[in-house]
Every structure is written in C-alpha cells, then in structure tokens.
Length: 404
Image: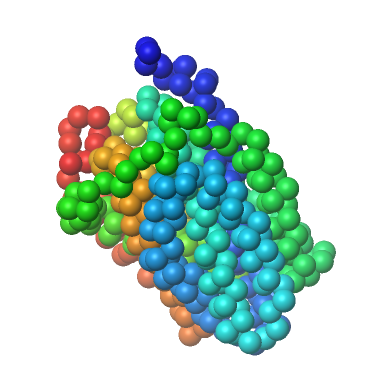
C-alpha cells in the first residue's frame, strides 16, 4: 500500500484529533475552574487558601501511580474503552464536590476519587491514539488534541463564574460535569474508533531495560526538570489568577473572563508552536516559550488593576502554557520509540503533575502570610529563568530539531 502523504493522512483521520480535543478538555475542568470556587468555598468553610490549594497537591501526588496505570491500560485495551469507561465516573466524581460540608478531609477524599477517573481522560489516553495513527502530520494532530486543554481553561472558568453567581458553587460542579458529558460522550462514542490495522492493543510495552535507560538519559532528566519547574509556575499563576485580579479591584465575572483567556491564547500557542517546531531549532522555540511568563509578571506588577495589562499578561501566560506541553510531547514522540511512548509520556505527565500541584500551594501560602500576591510574582521570576536555562542546556541534534 502506498504511504499516505501528510495531506491525505489528515484528510482521512481529521475527526480523531478533534474528538481528542473535546475529550481532553475535561481534564482541565477542576484545575482551571478551581480558582473561581476558591473564595466561595474558603469563606463558607473557614479554610485558608493554602488548605484549599493543597487538594491539588494530593491529586497530583496520586498521579505518580495513576498516570503510569492509565498508560499501561491504554496500551492494552485501547484509548476508546478507557475514555468511554472513565467519562461518566469522572462527571459523577466532580459533582460530589457540591455535597462537601465543612470537613477538609471530605474535600480531599473527593479530590482523590476525581483523580482516579480523571486519569482516564488525560492527554496520555488521547495522545497514544494520535501517535499511533499520525506520522507526517503528527505535529498538527498533537497541537489540535492538546488545544483541548486550552479550550477547557477558557470555557470552564467562565462557566464556573456564571454558575456560581446564578445557582451557587454547590450546583456549579454538577452543572459543568453534565455539560462536558453532553458534548464529549456522544463525540467519543460515534467518532473515536480504532481501525483494525492500527489497533493499539497489538502494541507491546518497550523492553524494561530500554525504558530504564531512557528515564536516565540527559534528555529525559533535563526535560522533566524544566517542564516540572515551568508547570509549578504555570499552575500556581493560573490557579490564583481570579483571586489576584479580584484583589486588584475587578469583580468576579470580569476576573474570570480575563483569566479564561488563558485558554484561548494557549490554543494559539499550541498551534503556532507546532508549526515552529517543524521549521525552527527546538532549542530556540523552547527557550523563548519558557521565558514568556516574565512579560506577564512585568504587566501584573507594573500595572495592577489595569484591564489591558491583565489581558496582555494572560495572553503571554496562555501562549507559554500551550507551547510548553507541545514542546514536551513533540520531543517525547520523536525522541523515544513508539513502543515505549506510553510509559515515557506517562512518567513525564506524573512528574509534571506533581510539580504543577506545588505551585498553587506555594502561591496560597505566600498570600496567606502577606495578604498579597506581589511576593509570589517576585518569587516566580528566578524560577522562570532557571527553567529556561535548563532548556538551553538540554542536548539537541542539529537535524530536524530533535533531541538526542
């Protein structure tokens, strides 16, 4: 059979990345809408913001086990079964937040339950299908799929703010979960199929020695360190954007609307980065993307309460957020063998998730101590510089912008 060209490949399988985009958007629901609920929940129960944010740390720590498990299961039964089996339990789990009544352990318990089923709709599941189906247009397919995280980070804060103000925070959780199911479940059931000749269940896990060697490589260690540090920065800022904007004088709707633009610009960042990675050296693209939060911090510190500055800051954060995961996924897919992609990518996601959970906790603790986000923003500056510096030191090959 004659190999498909990039255009033919995309024309034949374009519904798959779009379905993956819708599916993966759900995994961004709690992470990006959490800031909208923060003030209502902490005010009602008397929790500190650090206590509220530490729930994310618990979820991310569980990712150490859940991410590899999701990759293992996807390799064996296929992403369709994993996604369809996890969507309804995921929606029910996130709805349970509305039943919490004051005890912090209840909030943590629901977070752990949610983490279990959220693993079934993370990018690990959807990206395994993309890597197995696309070759020539893999970068574009990846960018479209990961744009679902940007889509989620845009729509969930806005919807959460609307629901909180109309039906209260308790009703907002199940309302958002129901909307996700209404769109994603039929899309996955009808259009997300595995062609028989490309059935992922036929793939074998890479040899243990090869995986162990890959996990010890300079590429993996350097990329994991840079991406982990950047994720702590990104999630720490994203989680606290709405409270930060409110502290600067904006109302909840305006704050959530501006914060939601992170999703729009992350979609742009993913698509632009996907194109640039095919045309420019990976090091240049990576270092530039990792330095973008510095511009956002300058806007937030220099022009507090100014809506134009807030929009520019969110645009830079969104673009950087989209570019970072695109860069990591692209490198993993090109650098490591497809047979071990699930295992290696799951390890990256687990590390990034844990590091990401630390950012909101640190930001919340700094706010609780100083009653201001200024110290947090200043703390982020050296973190950004170090992350970009690590990217600059990761070994790259001269051809095709790939890591070695």
